[in-house]
Amino acid sequence: MMRIAFYDCFSGISGDMNLGAMLDLGVDSQTLIDGLNKLELEGWHLEITTDQRHGITGTRVTVVTEDDHVHHHDHGPDQSHTDEPERGRAHHHHSDLEHHDGHDLEHHDGHDLEHHLHSDNDHEDSGGRDLEHHHDSDHKSEAVGGHHHPHRNLADIEKIINDSSLSSQVKSTALGIFRHIAEAEAAVHGKPVSEIHFHEVGAIDSIIDIVGAAICFEALAVDRVYTSVVELGGGMVRCAHGLMPVPAPATARIISGFPVHTGGVDFEATTPTGAAIIAAMAEPIPADIAYVISKSGYGIGQKNNPSRPNILRITLAESAEERPAGHNALLVECNIDDMNPEISEHISGRLFAAGAGDVWFTPVIMKKGRPAYTLSVICGEEHLDAVREVLFTESTTIGLRMLPVMKETLHREFEERETRFGPVVIKKSYYKNRLVSVKPEADRCAAIARETGLPMKQIIQEITATVREQ
Image 1 (spheres, rainbow, N blue to C red):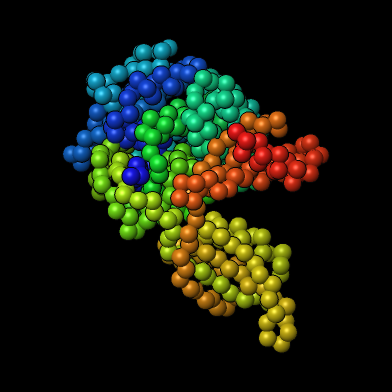
Image 2: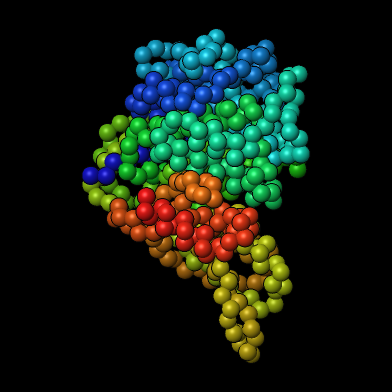
């Protein structure tokens, strides 16, 4: 039997809603707290409560930081962008409200900071207010309420996690989730990952959410994680570039390749942390999979939305047999012989942002002997309109052909390994639970090649051999 976890993201997902659902499923809260304390971070605690949405009882977890208590507890409904409401949290299984971290057990008002990447966005579930997204990547600290908070980059976060006494599995899972966020932000801003900085308080909040998720995944010990269509929400987010519609740019990039829906609620329902958990751990659930439910857990969000309960549901179940990782998709193609090839890279990026799973160009010879190329795109049916929009507005094609295809992919896992070159993300692929492929991340290997002057193929071979030996 295969043990599975099914994420039903009908009202979106955030980092602390995920923690709430995990605890509600039965992960022991003390296991979570003890694991988080291994990070040896101060200035935070968890508020764990029982709550309801639309009559459904679940768990609500609030990551409270010192900055929340000092600067946020006097704010009223019109809070500034630094006073960010909690998203969704959890209860301790033995009491309705407890505070943990081994350092500070003083009561806070429950406001918490969703993660903040300094080059991109402050994400707020503002309950109807515009979401504020900030760009300050040239500064090393930010004044909030008269206090200055130094920033951490991804390397700093990796050091905190790697220097802890957490298990290698928890470290690998947490680092993989964090890297999804940082790489998306770097791509959005056209900057190297090393230049993406986290606000200190936001980083603490993100570390707790993400490492907490990794601790809970290890405790649940599932064989496979599936997800439903992910609700992204609606409304607008305020960026340095002006108002932009939900999803935020980083969220859209992180969740690309997964079926999504927008407009189900009028606020940002899925945060980058939530999207990264799905991207790193889950895959779309096969349409005809059969499973037996053993338990469901509910993570409660802060906003009490009238149209649908602001809840993340995670279901633990067992499936009788391993399912092939296949799903229906569309192959969209057009032949082009009159477009400036310099535009090709731009169109590829637009197509991936629109939800394409793969994009490639094939040289062909068209009628009258004209050299040309075929632009091919694989996407889910839910992304067809967006893909079609890009092709007709960005390229010179005047027609498309669309063919149904079955796309089957191996089950993949990502983990970060220490090598003599430093940390490298490794992608492992499995067929029928058998490891069939091990590959280091190409971009990281290219960066190592530039830094060391060694051939990239030598770096890939050495890292691959080391991983297989281990």
